[in-house]
Image (cartoon, rainbow, N blue to C red):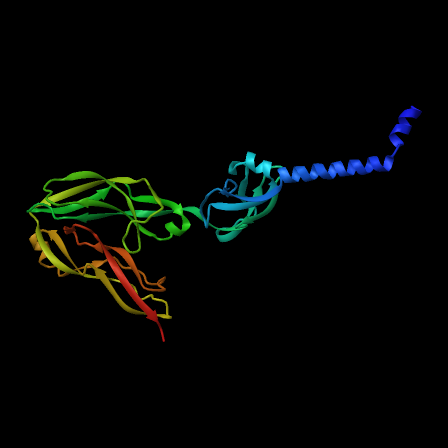
Length: 309
């Protein structure tokens, strides 16, 4: 044991120096052969933690992760080993910046993520119910006139992101009367329309169709008369009514000749102006006298208002 101790302690300083030199040489060789380098990976951003019941619009769906590590790690790694997700812990409806959280494999040092925050809009999925309107086109065969149009579905529900549903103003179905001489029925799809009469996008309608039954009458006379809008005088005191008109301004009615000869115009149902705050349009029913029919019993009323000075 004494001989072993003497052997280990013999020239101890030189032995320690040699060990230090060996370690330095090993580190130099390893660093030369497997140096630390930098690189970046473009990875998709996961939104798996997003709250339910919202439509999501993100400013981007990828981020760039920049890392540092030994060259050997870059050889073995691919972008599937790097992960990024949005932190929705403190979410809110509307547009907001959400932090990007990243995960990198062992041995890599994260330098940065670009972008480190992403603008996301959360739009809550909502529902709204509307009365179903039937819009007709075309003219029945000669000698025939519309007696009654009914539908199997009185109301339908629109579902979608709040921003899209808020633009829906009505739900309609279409029926073509062109050349029809007998009673008939059709299955018609339902469409959600926005304020300018175009089909609304990004929404669904349930139910999505209705059965329309058309009853025709023969031997009736026809006459074109003016439409008069009947409204209450309950406009808010801060507003003044500039104009109110129907579209169309004239309509063809049908009925027995002795009934039609005394009719010069058709009024709309009375509508209230109490909640009018700006120019708007409404769909209003016509008040049809007994024995009188029209192809479409609804008209569009345009209301124009201004501020009281």
